[in-house]
Length: 235
Ligand code: ADP
Ligand code: MG
Image (cartoon, rainbow, N blue to C red):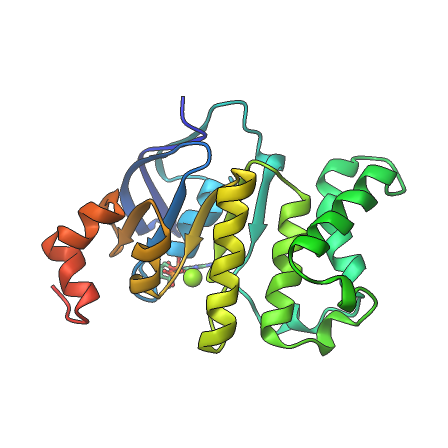
């Protein structure tokens, strides 16, 4: 079975559907991009895939040995989170909390994993810096390293590049691509940037308060739907 399967699922707030008709599977080491306009249900779906929100209908199933605490999550950013008063190292290390259970301390392995991920994301020189004093791109690298501390299996990234300038955005895409290709970590990433989504992702899920398209990036590019969005027009 795939790692994550969405079966006829819908999600609602106070009885009103936010996003519905969700039918797709995510297999180990695949790279999926979720695209769609504001309010189309992307963040709601990500919370559903994490089981932070229960489906109103249908099911979200995990397979292939995946557990909820083995999914790394980078939430959509809010102003409050950008003000986090901790060092880069502390923020990255806190990604191990879900594994720590009742132990009151971090193990050597926790610390080694944190250092490895800081190295991968080029954060060693920023180790002692305060998180809230970093640039937006540096903060996202820290949160990516933190999410990677929780998993070697799957990362769910909700708009990891929003608000970043084009150069920093390209750098983050390159790092995420490396995590997928070199470490084999499954990626499900929400993005507004359809052109980059088809460049990097294997599969595209396009939401319009329902599942409007799901298929490979190549199929998406050829579809009337993808053509219209890549051309900048609305179907
Ligand atoms: P996106 O991430 O694509 O911008 P969201 O998943 O945040 O979309 O929202 C999908 C729909 O659900 C929107 O109509 C939004 O207003 C609604 N919604 C999102 N969060 C809540 C909430 N906590 N309470 C009520 N409605 C919500
Ligand atoms: Mg959102």
